Length: 108
Length: 123
Image (tube, rainbow over all chains, first blue to last red; front, top):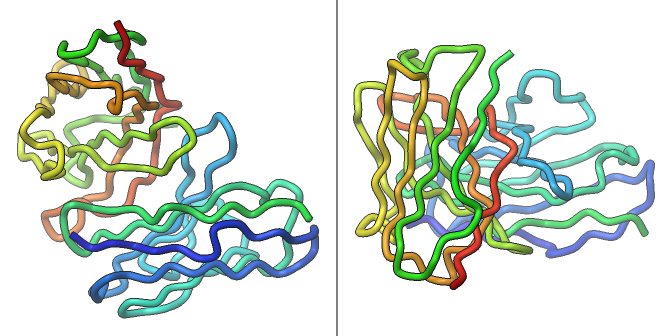
């Protein structure tokens, strides 16, 4: 099973600032089979990024993903008020498909 | 617009079987492009994938739960279902159903989610 470790656990930033979230895998995620999700309180997760860097339908271009192998990054270029939420990475290189433990982006 | 809706009891007694159904509307569960999956989230914790199924009945299970889980599909009703047996308090969670993109014969990312349903295991 591939274990995903996200850091930091919590990121305290102000609107307009840049957010950089990390996701590290215990073994190589082949062909960049990695996705990112956003979850707000009381809501289901929403797909943001798949294939490590492809934005899902309707996702603003301030969200971008990068990385390969075992190290991946989600970047939010300028935080909007609606971006404060919890973010999860997920690998689909091999079953069982696994998620990271999440990074909370909170208002400073 | 695709919609997924979970249904089932919100309270299950320890040692009993949790049963949930996901009804898909606005699209066909028999599409060749997708798997259909269940994911859960204990209160205040992260996400755990449970199982996924293709319309033909092909399945993937999380080994950590496989001995207690059965996933099934009913294409005539555009529904798929989850059964989790011998539940304990640690199975208390919000259970989500979701559409999973099919990728080289396997599952991948989850691009549509239901709103989730809280299932509490308690006597």
